[in-house]
Length: 369
Image (cartoon, helix red, strand yellow):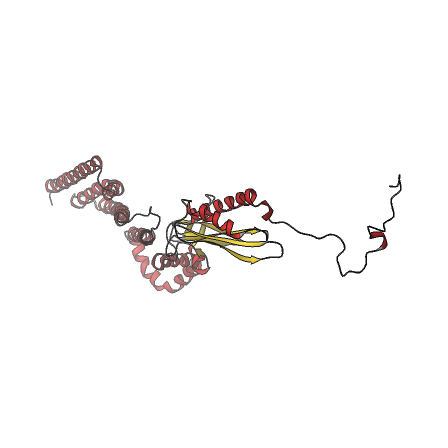
């Protein structure tokens, strides 16, 4: 091919790349000014820079393929452009996976109180997108390595010793592989989902919180005091833990109250019924007050009430405790827990000693200590 023809082809490719770039920018600005939907904004945000890099690289690769260059320079230039194209293409593919995730999640809203279906779907999409990104990066690294002749030549030797290498890698990467497999189990079986309320036991402590992030190898739990608990995914698939929002977010809360035997239970029941029914934290479902135990010194009462979620349940329990305490202090202070003791001689223990009998006790003389 003559130099003139090669330059003509290069010029045509560059013009097409420039026109594509300009068209993409015009569409991008139009969408941004128009305030289009979330999907369009996500597409612009995640593909703008990969496209800006990929288009010039594609034009340069076509130009390098048709322009007559010295042999060593031609080979090295094509190899470098090929590696750059693989990396840029992977970058674009990762960006498109984020766009697909946003497009799928646009159909669901996780901000509602009872958002079980949305959280289930979001967990699957979130974990599968992470798996897709990892696989794309692995394929990209493999593609880059295969551009080198030395790596392709060593492939046969690696395949011959694949058994030994596989055993070594398997022994060294067992924890990582276990966590990756557990991550796929979380995505498919879904024992937990994003925003689930869980109680996880670590050592002698139990941590109450919400599932904030699910990664391929670990889970981040936002604890009630705003700390973050990082738990390996394999721990969640091998150990029991509590999930308070497995089927719905409704939670039954309870408050134990210890009172004296003189307490009129019906009066406290009527008062707490008014407290619960007037509270915005009650969902209008379950409410009762029952005597659950008769102890040696006190009577144990249990107030049971339902709430829409765990946060509302905790607030309602605290409110019931406070109002019950105030009611006992103001209306029935004698019903607060107390200890009774009888001091002195009891019938059936024989006669009182001479010195202990009040009628026979010797009078105390003046001046005696």
